[in-house]
Image (cartoon, rainbow, N blue to C red; front, side, top):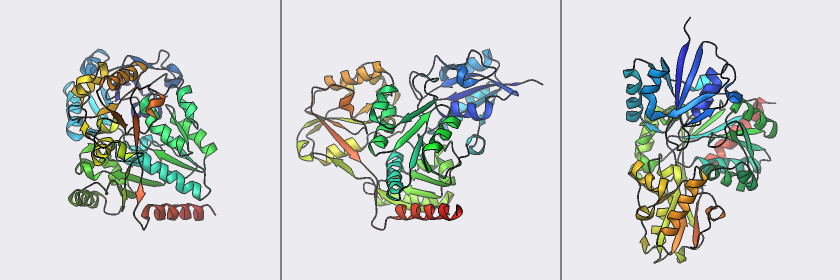
Length: 445
């Protein structure tokens, strides 16, 4: 019997998890390559033998997705598995057409085949697009559990941008752990706010091992999703965020619509800055595809420590990287805060961008006059620092969730923009979590 020869299309996350869950140890097939897209510096590496297992004594090579057709031909692949997230339906089908034109099968693997089972209750926080506010909700859930005296541990969607073997299981409980594990800016943006909120975070590559470690430490597992991917762990309660500032995207991006259709609770975030028509459009979309879901509206207020210091100034705005790159937003909380505080001028960083930072504006032409906080490698962090230093401004307004001056020495004043989930007065999300806790408590008696 001829074994299937498989290429997995990925971005250093879902692809590795799908391999571990479906193909590792599977004698009926052989994964001959991964391809990489979305994230820089992923290609030209190897998924290591220590993670791949038998019969991958040399590991599995990772190539740039641009080589896909060539790889299918040269490696004699007959199936291509798509395994990354936050991609429009039109782009997804263009990629499918590239595969099908070679004669190979194009495959999507669903949640049931890839979800781990936990011995602890699991709450998942996912979204229909990158940048909806998942981490804000995760922090809020952590505080609600702590108020009940319950130890919640976060298991975060993977971002293994360094040594894959060393990152098989990662635990973050202190800010010092971020430096010890050589975290990128993108990793820090997700982990640092959770650590600052007093939460323990697990992540890495091998999620079977990660989950078992988290179960030993926490009473409830909070799955903190990445992009708009669905959970790696089977949830007992599925919370999904939608963004009224991008109404229509909730049913136009893969796999965000999958999340929306599965959700028990749908949170419409940012209602304090969205128009009523935008909120209504998202509500209608939820009702069309998942009328049984409980819909909760939340605010996402933006806070500046010294708004008066911004008035009249020439301001460089730095935004959360993924939100404004593959998240598709031209700007974020930083630009909104700068304008609300009466900035005299928003300085466009494009003329001063260098290296890979300059390349972002070509790769993501939708970007507005803001600087994405990108730093997947030390050299890119240095290019980010060069760009900031070269931009003529009075003040740097940074809306990335991390303490950027700790990583980059800047000769200019820096002000941090913060944002958090805020409930409406009747606190529907708090009440929903209380009901869930009561339910799982009664089930265990």
